[in-house]
Image (tube, rainbow, N blue to C red; front, side, top):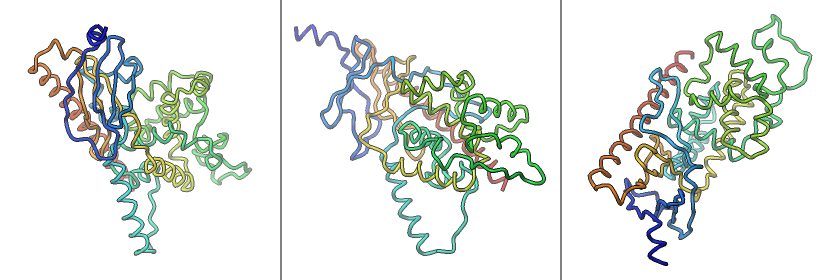
Length: 337
């Protein structure tokens, strides 16, 4: 019976790319099962079974936008080094504020505000915002996001007032309003605030009507909800006041600093290579932790090494492309100042 059970698992040797961070949950063993599950043992001796069908899948040719308008996104955990970097940076900022009480300059856009807080590239902006939304630490319907009821009108009338004065919130919160805003901005070639957002997020946003969105919320499909919400948020980003920007900034920074490093490791399935890859997001971008191949027992060490190098090169290409998007976004921001 024991022999039969053993034969039901492809016991795979993992490839360690780099030592995982002290204090962060490590994968000590990972196996593919014939039940199409991943059997994972962590460094704290807990065991988990992950349904491969529910994990994020990618192929050998991930979408990389050569126009530098869209970021390639993987739903991964934040690396402990990145969290520690933010904590150290936060301490440094407090010391600077105490030594220079005259410093009053504040970023005037949501993107610039979050970039100042968390650093990194545009992919960090997206991942941290998504995490804050998914973990319910930021609600776009929080009271501070609600527009005050007023009869005031600007003189002369402004285009932004015409477009937003009927909105309940500072952002276009319902799908009908948000899609209308998207269509107007697209016709005016003014979608700069969505530059860098993964194309799949925008496709999901455009293909979802309000009842579907409400069903996503009811079904606790947090990933879908947060991806739609981030598009809505950025469509309304240029209409946010400083209070709203600072509020979102504080929520994101608090969420990241309280990030639970014991969160289950993220595993991405690279279907074309029969590989399960644990990944995190550190200061520089996506980082590979471990790789296990489903057909490890039937391929040579040379083939394993070839696949490993291809996956490593792919992740590097994604990081390089995302960095170009970030640099373009940064350049556009400073050109407007």
